[in-house]
Length: 86
Image (cartoon, rainbow, N blue to C red; front, side, top):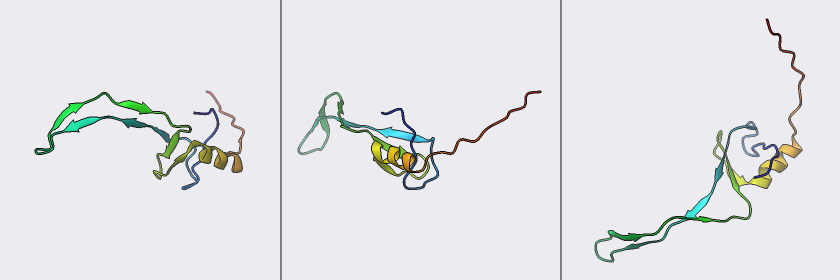
């Protein structure tokens, strides 16, 4: 994942709450008659060229570059803050 801001291209409100979706492959064998599982192998991570990102507000999922490009098109305005400590 890149160290760049995201912005959801679907709901256009979320800039902070996201999930990374990864895929795994797990081989198994079943009995042809009963359907019971006979053998299960360890899950293996499937390497994707680009991670899939999911917005945790609207559940839209797309490639990472789409979220990055949306953030570049609509950058977050920096507002000055002046906290007062008493």
